[in-house]
Structure formats: C-alpha cells, structure tokens
Image 1 (tube, helix red, strand yellow):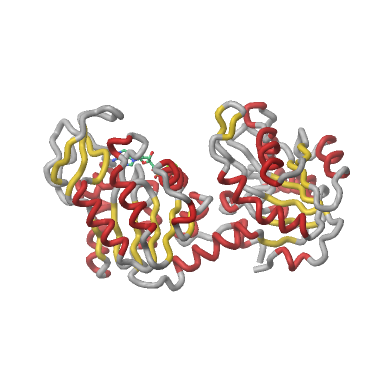
Image 2: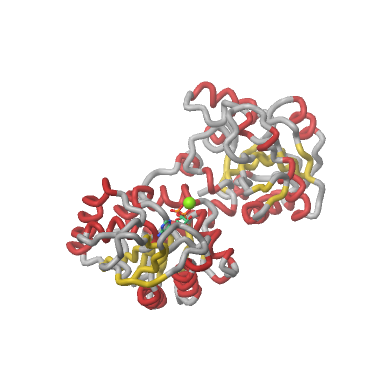
Length: 395
Ligand code: ADP
Ligand code: MG
C-alpha cells in the first residue's frame, strides 16, 4: 500500500496527518506518552521531506463540542518537547485559529489542531455531516497521511472521509502494525501460540472464533477463565462469571478438540475472599474453588505451564492480563507470561491497552517484545477478520 513517498515532492506542501495521541491525562499531566512517541517517525519523515505538517488527533470522548477537559494543548507541548521544536497549537479544529496557524507554517514546521472530536461531524453516523467536516479539514491540507492506528477501525471524518478528498498515504506506524497483523494471520511461523486473558470472554468472542482456526495452542487466563471452568462443570466461587456465555465456551472447547488445537486452561488459581489489593491470597486447584473465594490470578503451576508453552513457540500473540495485575499480589501470572514472551525466538506480539500497560507497569521495556500494538480495538478487529475502513479507503 502507498507510503508517503507515493505522495511525490512534499516540499512546501501542507500535509494533514491523522495520529493517535489519545494519551492518559491526570489533570494537565500526561501519565504515559507512549502514543506520542509512536507518532514521531512519520512526523519526522514528513518534516525531512520539507512538508508543513498539520497533525489531527482526538483525546477522550467529548460530546461533539469544545470541552476544556479534553483539550490537546498539553499534548502539543509534549510533542514539541519530543521533536525538539515549537509545535503550533490551533485552538479550534477548522476555524479561524486553525486556518491562521496552518497558514503560518514554514517547510518542516508542525502544527496540532484541537481535538477533532470537538466537532460533531468527526464521529457522526450521518455521511453528510461527517463529509462536511471532512471537507473543512481537507481545505487545511494538500495531502493526507493516515498514521493513527488506534482509530483505523473507525469510519470517522479525520480517518476515513478525508482520504476520499485528498491524495492519501499510509504512515509508518500504521504500516508497521498492519505488517505485524498480516504475519499473525496469513502465514505465522509454527508453533503459533495465542494467549488470551483480560476481564470478559464476551469482549473476545470474535477473536477466539477466528484464532481457534489458526493457532496451534490457545492459552486462556484472566477473568474469562471462570466461564470456561464453569463450562467444564466446575464451580467458580465468587469469581467473574458470564453465565450467558457458558454454552459458547463449551462450544469452543469442543471445536478446539475437533480442530486438534490444544486449548490450555489453568490447573490452579490464586484466590482471595474479596476484590481487594490487600485481600489474603491462597492457591487452590482450578476444580476446587471454594464457594466464598474469587479467582484473581492463574496459579503458579499454570503460570509455569503457560510460560513453557510460550517459550517453545515461534509466533506468539498475547491479549489480556492473566490476573488482576493492578494488585501486586495477583500480578505474578501476568508477569511470568510477559517474561516468557521476552524469551521467544520468533515473533512475540502484545496487543490490548491493558496488556500493554501491564507489561510496562511490571517493569518490562517495549524493546523486549517483537511488537507492542498501540491500538487495542483496531488490532482485535483485524484479528477477528473484520475489514478496517481507515485502511481499505487508502487502497
Ligand atoms: P486488554 O485491554 O489488554 O484487551 P482487557 O480490557 O480485556 O485487556 O482486561 C484487562 C482487565 O482484566 C484488567 O484490568 C484486569 O484487572 C482484569 N482481570 C484479569 N483477570 C481478572 C480476574 N481474574 N478477575 C477480574 N478481573 C480480571
Ligand atoms: Mg482493556
């Protein structure tokens, strides 16, 4: 697919870049600037090509109107620090401030527009309303580069509609992410192990559906374990249980067996009497969870078995923490799985917002993994086999 070189000579051209700068904020302080850093290679490449770079991004979920709590102003400052230049900030998306700021750019300079979701057209389901906003955005640029991987599964004005109005190309972050996802789905080196966890099985049904066809081994941990254990007829105490998904899990167990896919469930569970960081932890057999206890992590035997299965793989995709890693007493399973991923001689991929946060919080460096995806929803939708509108529109 077309990269920025396909846009021709960019010297003096205004290039609109959609980035994913949706960082966590505590007041005005950015608590994790990972997404800003991930957006730098494309912005730098455009600067070097002599473009006048106009970055579009969103922050949080404002209700289609300006809301100071969701201003990108702090992000403009951080982006400037990381680039080592002043980044001009437009106080609106397509108004006077945006036009003035863009008109004032020199070759190689960078501006950031205010949160595109301050305009109701950005996320509107109405094609015309979205199109109108996209028309206004398009007036601020001569070309468009799609680099916000976290939003490419969204049919939104600054992601999708704008690409139908300007010469468009794919940024480096999106190209890297799509390349990795292709490796996971088209011809993964085997054995291919998929590790799934997180809170709810209902969030991951479509992923399980699709990957059960492709993986050699599927390891299940996290809160979704208990619905699988219930499907095997065990009682799960007060653990997270989705009673309406028990039959679905039973079907998955049967399908895995049919396909010769090994579906590995934990054999022991770390439990506690309540959902609390200081709750006293103990380890029980997965088949023997006491009625008054809840499972908050996979147990030590299971963590060892999972780590072993992961280390022997040539391709690993992991989504969803193995336990409530936010509580140190229940982080061991997640930590061992993360550790094992760092020892894979092949491709290891971490996907999912909480999973990425978990590996960083547990002290791992991004470089220890083959790839940490920046877009949870987009990578899951791709792995579910869905089309991504923001990608399709570029080809
Ligand atoms: P991701 O964002 O990586 O896709 P999810 O959003 O699906 O992951 O799930 C992350 C959450 O799952 C974490 O906040 C973690 O505390 C929770 N979780 C993991 N194991 C359990 C469990 N046994 N009981 C309750 N919550 C759990
Ligand atoms: Mg999550």
